[in-house]
Image (cartoon, rainbow, N blue to C red):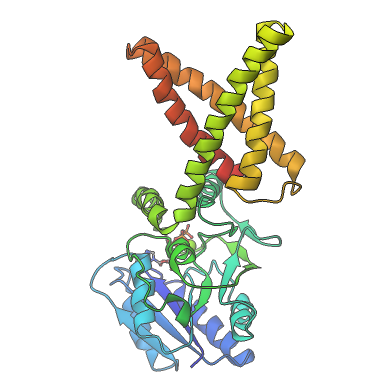
Length: 353
Ligand SMILES: Nc1nc2c(ncn2[C@@H]2O[C@H](COP(=O)(O)OP(=O)(O)OP(=O)(O)O)[C@@H](O)[C@H]2O)c(=O)[nH]1
Ligand SMILES: [Mg+2]
């Protein structure tokens, strides 16, 4: 057995049979030795019963019936526990993911071109069809936040395959909705590839992604920090660079004003710009280890924009703490700098670098 494809189901009565049929066809057409493992969480709509009835007709189909709704990630992991394939995969049941792409993901790994393959909606050529503005915005925001950890364009998709050996002895958290990001962070792989897919919004059935999933996602994001020591290192380097920048800023302000005789507000602007430029260079080369020339102009512009926003945020919190909470203004400024630093770091990490 080469491929074990897990399909988690919760109330997918109207979708699952059609999907199973399509996957079977794909396996046959492309000579893929694969098995399908459906993990159903006692769906009230009777998905489990339908599966039991079709089981005899479809070979290479395994069904796991769980007693309650235990979540998407744990369903995938439970499916993989009984998987026999060397390549483990997952796919949604709602016909959102194109079965025609199974072969592409599979061959990437089977031919040794990658050990992790992702059906990506955000890679060039990929697309999402049928989502409204709110849904798109939510997905984009979640994806943007994940950029703290990965450059993968679509770390939230439910369609992917990975070599079994990559997750050997890895502790994967079964809580939550987004198992792919967890694997990207924790699994042991060399090459990860994104294959563009066109995602079609479900026609039948209801979405299970809700507010609970958003909270769980945010909680998971924070929980990943210890796994990515690099991010913590970058944060301290960024803060250090910020410290150097402040020294440069104050020193220049003094020199330009006192020694050169420039009007102090003008020297403040000049020294701010010079300090910011030196921060940009140091962060690009030292903190985020990038080639200085790589997209330099665009990134400099982004860095500047973040700096200006952060300056406004800083002033806002300074005002808030001092005027509303009646904290001594110097202490307020220390607090405001702390907040500004965090926003500055994540803003640049996510957007600029
Ligand atoms: N076994 C199991 N499957 C689940 C659970 N939650 C969701 N699923 C399945 O996981 C897949 C993805 O869930 P969806 O509700 O489609 O989530 P989504 O793709 O983010 O949202 P929509 O496409 O808008 O519905 C589907 O096949 C669901 O049936 C669960 O708790 N247990
Ligand atoms: Mg879906």
